Image (cartoon, rainbow, N blue to C red; front, side, top):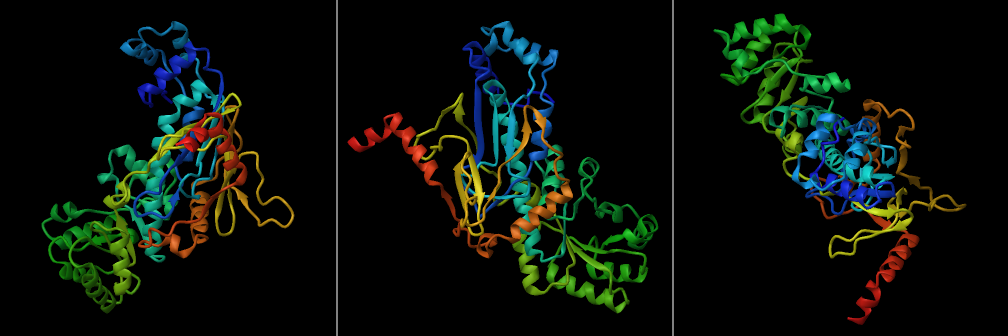
Length: 448
């Protein structure tokens, strides 16, 4: 996998480290977000599988090296650096929370410990992959929770920020609880169920709506879903009822979906098609679906597109990747509003809260201590995968179980100021003060 999937400054820094003799110093970086995104009380982690694939296959080709040699930023760089880049492989360690874990502000999702040059180059890819998929997985979890057991399908590829983003959004939405996706490439790559039948253009392509329905039923049989609102929704429903079995159901894509779903349900039931499903689409999101549920609309499934694939109401996650150790020396930033805590860390999850601690601590291990679970686990050691990653179906189940354990208020769509409790261990805060003192910050602050 190409190492050019990074920002230029990662490579200029790598060249600088190489020239300064620091490229092989062992660095520890942590990936986390400082603040929860807008309207969110938690984030569902996703994207680890692609991160592992990336670091396991990180390569530079001769052609890519020639491209870099021609950049003006590298005109003073030693040829030995490019030789090192050509032979570069990720040889470090990667610790991470399992995909599908609810995460909160300040908690490391991924920790990278590797030679400095390697650890620096991978930053951009990790931020982009974890940040994007975690956003979509979180959005999916919110939508599927309010759907209350009714099926939700990802229909967002056509509105995603690129075709590849649509593929990954389909994967992340499955982790968050969708039953599948409309994206066939997602289904092919990841074994996710795919759904979809026909659009309005199918109806318009035939001389009559009946002939369009007849051909669709002939094509799809029990999987037939009639799109009934191309011309007149009620008449489309009556035609679908007249067609009878085989069919899965009908789809509504416009109008007042609450009133129309009731009318359509009656038409189908009067025809004896009690098991025929009603699927709703049309710019849906978690708030609209909640309204449908409150109104008792007889809708059995939802196709969600734009809002899901782009996380429209909260479209970015400010993930950062910060150096916390270098060759045994702990490091930290002290800049206002962007400070970091020094040293490698572990996150312990208790029944009611989390604690961010030093990596060497073992909270909940002693007799009489409340039980806790360490969330960061080794995934890659010495550049090699420790054990096979869980299947996507297992990740999806784990995510569902983990979300159910969160307090109800944390899962709320509206109480977005009710943050889950995250504490810092005494040892970590003592280390922070020690590093501040060593840098003269406490003395300076006390003299002000």
